[in-house]
Image 1 (spheres, rainbow, N blue to C red):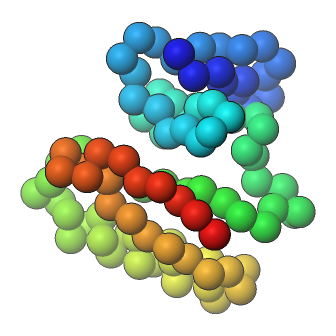
Image 2 (cartoon, rainbow, N blue to C red; image 1 turned 45 degrees about the vertical axis):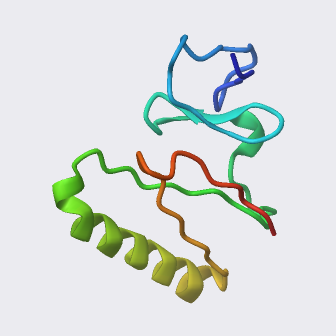
Length: 100
């Protein structure tokens, strides 16, 4: 089980056995199908690096997913001056390694 303190929480709330989580080397950063965010990775005005995700469980709607990814990336570039890297995680590519 990956350690996880939810946004606004103070106590470790371990993911369920077999639950899908997004994690880094320290622990889970997001769980419960992307609606439960971690306190330690919350976005602030001082945030320099961020992990944002969009989920789609219906592969017949991949075009909508790709469009949403592009719109999010475009908004980040335009409004925040950020750089964006996108990755798709699926059954054929179940994990990615994110580096600077």
